[in-house]
Amino acid sequence: MRPELLNALTLAYLGDAIFEVYIREYLVIEKQIVKPNDLQKAAVDYVSAYAQAGFMKAAMENGWLTDEEISIYKRGRNTKGHGAKNKKTIVHNQSSGFEAIIGHLYLEERHDRIKEIVNFYKKWVDFDKNQS
View (cartoon, rainbow, N blue to C red):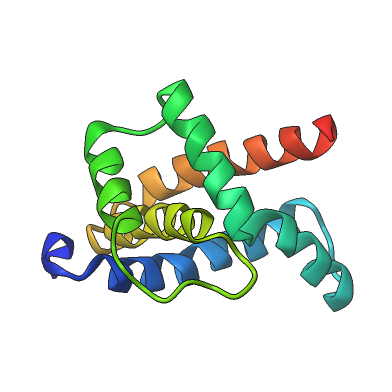
């Protein structure tokens, strides 16, 4: 499948699911959180649209993404879709752009690159949480 031919919202849909698996694995295996209620609370810090939008700002500022990934992000961010309830449209769009990157890389079977981005993401969220 050629991801560049897919609608960016489709890439984001897939990317959201893939990203969620990586984060759940991180919380259970690395953070060793095992109680479902605690897992749900912890997951919110990592998979929220606000966290994803904040990460994208940091990733762009720090050069953590390739030009190709930035292009995919912009394509996903600029796609018209249904805004999520209680979220600013711009944050939702930035989140969709991030998820489109993950979906695109997944379809290209670039799992090592997904892991790199997720590792940047986890470190950024953990650092950001400790700064608050």
